[in-house]
Length: 402
Image (cartoon, rainbow, N blue to C red):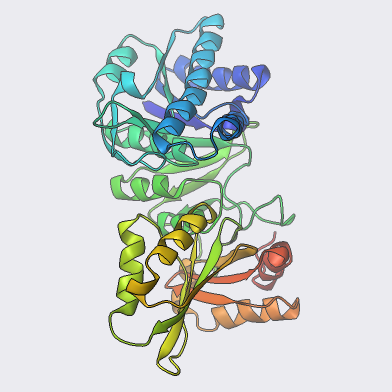
């Protein structure tokens, strides 16, 4: 068997945890499996590197940030190879150049184009454990690129797909995918299995267990994932196309504080104005989530939408620079907001789910600012200060606890 195992930063945060991971991987190796290990940077290394960069240049170019951040994973993989060697097992560490992990050229948020498998297969044939840097690739200019926060998950899935691995395990500091963040909702329940579509929605909407693009890729290439803890041997959560368990109405609740609301005030109420606004944002690679347009009055309308917090300032500047083109009178920014979402395939055949969610928020006096829906999710925008209260109330309302 060929197995791919990915370990997050907390799983390799110190010497003891590095050796813990090494021993777990060696167990599979000694069973006769070929083992590929994907690692994130140790502990808070990435945050520390970002802080150092801001000390030097608060507006550093993304190319240079990628050059800097790519060093974090190289430290992890080299130390892991040393640990395995000290335990008497041959291992080799490889970075994105050495594997040749080709990506697009968008610094800080690149996407994989293809992975050359020749070097990895050569090392596996020599009966070595192959340890690969997560989170990074190489573009057509031979520059390092990074895949965005959580990108090591996507590296693992991409390798599993390219090499037709038999198993892809994502190890983290929790035991699987829960009905809500167990650090906030104490009675959150671990799920045995979840569909790709539900997991993709939860990952996109703030659940930090898996990188959303890793779930997209797993679904596209049929890579079955298992999310489990690196700190114990408990069964994890299987992410796959269909689940065999009886469908729950709601699979989980997710919260995302990494959001900002932008309101574009007094646009002309005429055809083509919304296109001008959102086409401008799309051309500048700004992703939009919830959108709300007011009823037109006195020949004008307002449009509000949400973006990631990191994109807020750039979005405001872009709209200000193009006010005349999009006919806006004023632009407003609100950052103390958060998204709260429910996700579940069972929602499609059950009317009244949204009403139940809204009732739960009403009962704890949480006001809703915006609403967005799809076949398997309902998302609301609320004040950030109410996120924990709202999360618990909805979790209780749908009886998601054990």
